[in-house]
Image (cartoon, rainbow, N blue to C red):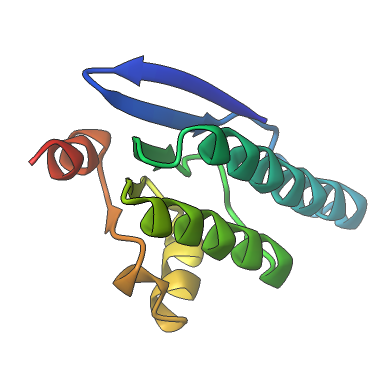
Length: 123
């Protein structure tokens, strides 16, 4: 699930979910499904306003599956084709490493802070 806020012409989507799954295989599976579903919801939100400026706050997302990555890429494509902008902020170190290894950062810039991400969108 995402909380969407509008600040200074930027739509900030913040992930809202429970990632306390340490040592719990069922909990990890549930979290993975929650992230995949949340990224589908994000895609729907972004598709309604693809020309906008989108800041996606990944704080709290500690794992990302291949299905979730595919959904994220589809969302980035919708924004790119429509002439909008999208950036990612506060990704967990594991998620960041996965996205960097897959070279997704070439189409989805990542920033460590919300302020840096927002500044990039507004520049």
